[in-house]
Length: 277
Image 1 (cartoon, rainbow, N blue to C red):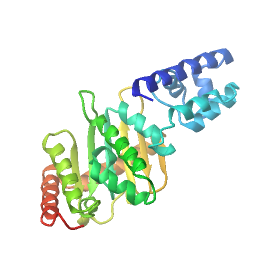
Image 2 (spheres, rainbow, N blue to C red):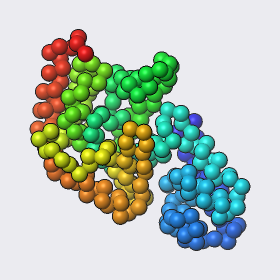
Image 3 (tube, helix red, strand yellow):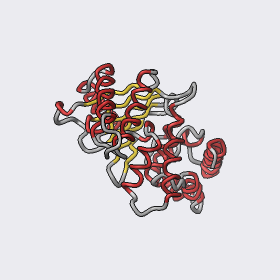
C-alpha cells in the first residue's frame, strides 16, 4: 500500500472511530478511560495523528461492540511483511517525527544502512531464505532511509557504540562503504552522529537499542529492541526515563568532530585490506 493511500486509510479509521464512539454516547475521555489511554489519545486516533497499537484497537472493539472492525483495520494497515509486527508502527511513526534520537549498541541503524550492509544483516539473521526475500528486506531498509531526505526530514541524532565500527558486517569493503556513507552524511550535516567509545565501559542502555521520537502534534514515544522483540512505549514516565538514559549516553560519547575522525580512521583501516573478510 502506498504511503498516500495508507494515510487515507488511517483517516478512514479515525473517522469511523469518531462515528462509532459518538453513536455509543461516549466522549473521548470516557472511551479513553475504558481502553486505558487518555482522551487526548482518542482524539489523535480520530485525527489520524497517531496510530493505535493492535491491543488498543481490540479493546475499542470490545467497548464499542463493533464486531472486530477496528482490529481488522489495524491489522490490515500494519501488515507489511518486510517488518516484524512489533516494528511496523515504528516505521509509520518515523515518517511523522520531527526529531529522532537513537542509540545503536551493535549494528548500524536501519535508517543509515547501505544496501550491502543491509543485505549482510538480513542473511545473517535468515540464512535459509531466498534471494527475493533478501532483496525485499533490503528494499524496505532503503525506503525507510528516504525519511531522512527532503525538506520535512526530522532531526536525526545517533549514538553508535564503538563496536558498531569494529565488527566487519558484510566484509571489509562493505564496512568501509557503510562507514564512509555515515561520514558523508555527517560532513553534509544531514545527521548528527556520535560514537560511544569502548573506554566508557558500563553505560545506561546496555540492554539493547533505544530510539526516541518527538512530534509536533503528539507526545513523544520510546522504542526499545532486542534480537527477537521490540516494545513501543508512550507512557510519559517511562519515556522520560528513556530520554534521561539517552542524555547520559550523549554526555559520555565523543564529540561529533572526534566521532567523525574515529569513523574516518575505521574506514581507512578497512580499506587497507578491502579484499579480505
